[in-house]
Length: 510
Image 1 (cartoon, rainbow, N blue to C red):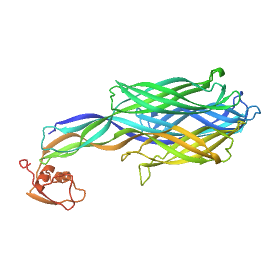
Image 2 (spheres, rainbow, N blue to C red):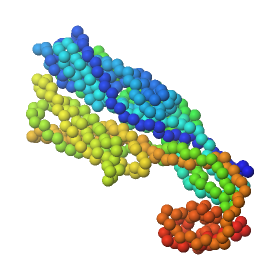
Image 3 (cartoon, rainbow, N blue to C red):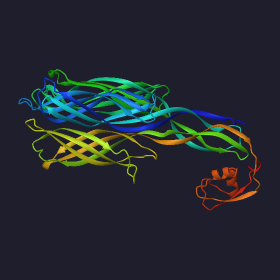
Image 4 (spheres, rainbow, N blue to C red):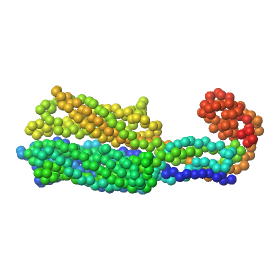
């Protein structure tokens, strides 16, 4: 006989694969005719732009561009330092097992290094190392049995769970334009170096919409027409709306920013400013936390019970954690007397796995690239690495957090003897969730039981791993019946070796 059940529908979201891969972008470039010959490379920086990303079966295709800025020592008596802006297109296909077209994904690309080698005065060889991190998610609507109707003889084991059900996802394109002013005495000749990061992220939920807000922070080094080096920090607001039906306050929003294109160029010298145009794709996945009464197991003391059961994996306790790590260290360099510190690039890296003895503790390292210049415009480039430890707050079990790190504030104070006090505030954003396997029950039926219970009472000795539920199911009785018979007040507390009296079950006594 088919048993009447009540059901509810969940959109199960699960992580299918998480993969990191290193790709290389290599190209030989000719120095533009308007630039002097290259004597030596001082430093190279860049910004990754993604033209197109496409998830296909078992692979992810990426088409992009590395917008590269090369600061070099010119083989020219009139110009000591010059800059070249080169564009390196790339196309990659990354193998990702179990990925399917139509699945959701998040993509993060970080520049690990850019090397520029002089082949001759007019030809350069550029090699960039990019770290690509990809998370692939699948969504599946499933029906779960959450209650049995009109059958008091069926014993049910339930578990209260909070699962993350996907509400929806969407994206928007943001085009922003900003003018960044420099000092009035600086007539900009060319751009030497660019660094870009996206911070101050925030989302606001309104009716069927997500308001996404962030800032693109640009650190720009430039050369003036009278051969001085200047630096400026500019911020470009990034604001956009993402249409997602049925979103509500309290939902969890997971946003990801992909830079699609960027243009940075000086305005006319008399304007003393830099024009910035940036195009960004913002992708958002929205989850709601649902409280469900999930049936884990069932049986009947009086009937045979047959049901289908399948196992699905899903995300629970999804949340975004933001934190700030303050790092205060001292580094020392020789031969920096009478030199001015004009720029420091700080690149954070953190271990993706916690320590064996403390899974909440992660090891990290700041790679600091210092640029000095003297009165004769001679540039000196130095590097230092600062190790640090980071303790992740409230890291749940079965969780592998994905870290996004960004330098929020930095201050460097040069002291006597080549010491530099480094005061760095690093913002850490981590999207985390627990992976959980759920047993889903469907199609419950009963049939008549051929009873072979010829005892009146059984004496059972509790063994390691026993629960009242398992014992009751084994002897076709109920947890409540055993507890009442043996005077057990807390059904969750059994002692190994404890003696239990289990009378033969009858509907009347139950």
